[in-house]
Image 1 (cartoon, protein in one colour):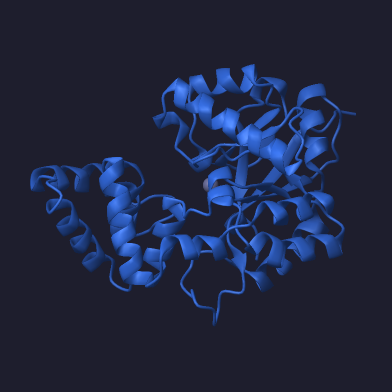
Image 2 (cartoon, helix red, strand yellow):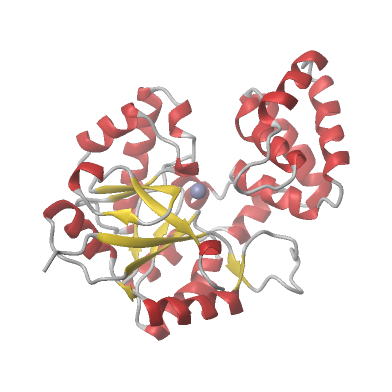
Length: 312
Ligand SMILES: [Zn+2]
């Protein structure tokens, strides 16, 4: 009999009661739909534990046919408020990837700030014009903006319209960091009417929350420190990201033996892989690619499904 090494890893971000909430437009999974999806996954798959996935990948120990791992990115409060009680009542484990800085410093990640600005905005074309005006008043040339519009304006996996795709890319990595941070904070205060720090405090888990989740048998892995696109960082910057995220895991009492990495934005390069090996990382996940094969040679290149790939 051949030994199974195929695994379906499902990726979640926001899981909450969305309809009728303060942020009804947030792109996340409605809690009711999460429960329906768990019913489906539990009937079609065997939900296995992070520790079994690590040892299967590194030592070749078998996992059941139709195995599934549940993963939750970005350290949202949703994960203790909605996800944890549901997983506990079903006696299944979740794997959580919180970005350390958001948890420790209570600072809003730019990726989260952008989600909520777009959530609140009803006219993406106007928002893009506003963003361009803010860029021009910061000495970004009109010609450069037109170039960016062409280079970064294509629709992506997550956005079917060009404007939100372009807004996200400009604010995530195209604009110089200082300008980006400054513009995000202006747009955030305008659209959300709240300081980013106060908002972050409600949005992210605390170290105390994470300790509770660990005590309840959940698994916690690294999602970097600042949630940087690692492929856009120097090797030294990446090293710092990894060291600091490991310090964080130690601080909350999570295991750092054959630890798990989840690349922020799914991005990494050959320096990342060298560093993961040097720091004894067990396995590492991207943010797409569907079904994964647990094989030691692919251990830093494991793929995942999105929750939207399964019935909800
Ligand atoms: Zn992330």
